[in-house]
Length: 125
Image 1: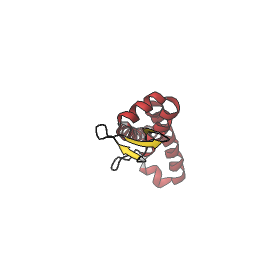
Image 2 (image 1 turned 45 degrees about the horizontal axis):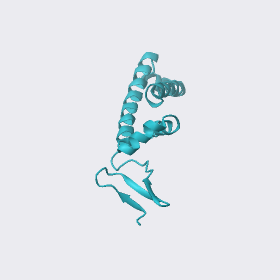
Image 3 (image 1 turned 90 degrees about the horizontal axis):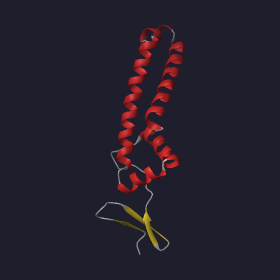
Image 4 (image 1 turned 180 degrees about the horizontal axis):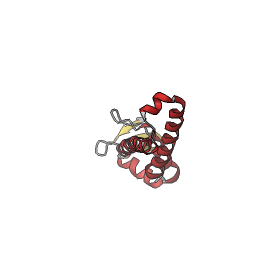
């Protein structure tokens, strides 16, 4: 019996474990669809806290597409938030030219705040 088989109808890959074929737990994204750091965080969250939802996405073959889409949304939201918060706090290129250390401190604070917002709104839901 073969170690791995693929169901032509569903496209799912199965692995021989003992006498049974089980769905192969391949969490790697398909080529051309990187899931990125936000997608990996959400994947870990799904595995730990929403096992049924994770299993449904995995068995339907939609997990990687779902994670890649979520990663794109999170990246866009993060970028917009950093720009918005920087404008609100007055962190500009002028400040960067005048006082680089203060600019770095403020930008790090803004990035951390944006990470928290994205995590709470998209990743851990």
